[in-house]
Length: 171
Image (cartoon, rainbow, N blue to C red; front, side, top):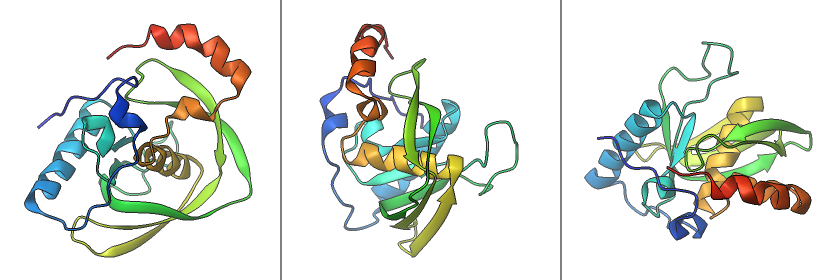
């Protein structure tokens, strides 16, 4: 089922999400709905808070680069209780968008590489090593679980310039 994606102004997006203690049939259903919603909206990632669920779960499609059909994983992946355990010191500044703020794209500085630990939908512990775009996707979606939106990462001067544009963003 396609879920409604919240607008960036919704207060649930500013709350730290709750850890998932048990993978229930409801959690599995939410995972499938999140994947379907992400694909339908042409997203590379989707966090549960974006669909009004304050749970530590993300769906990601780890494409190696935007101009390539090659994928790091052929199927979208759901990560439960993901956490970044290591970041590279090397950073880059790339454009990002968000399904909660359609049409808004900003250059955001992020670590070029990350290691993420999580559980898969079966409850198995997994670790993902990602670089470049996949690393950016993981950082962006995990930020959502901590109540952080991508435009929180820009400087004050940029935020002042962005304020007017944000008022015109709607879902």
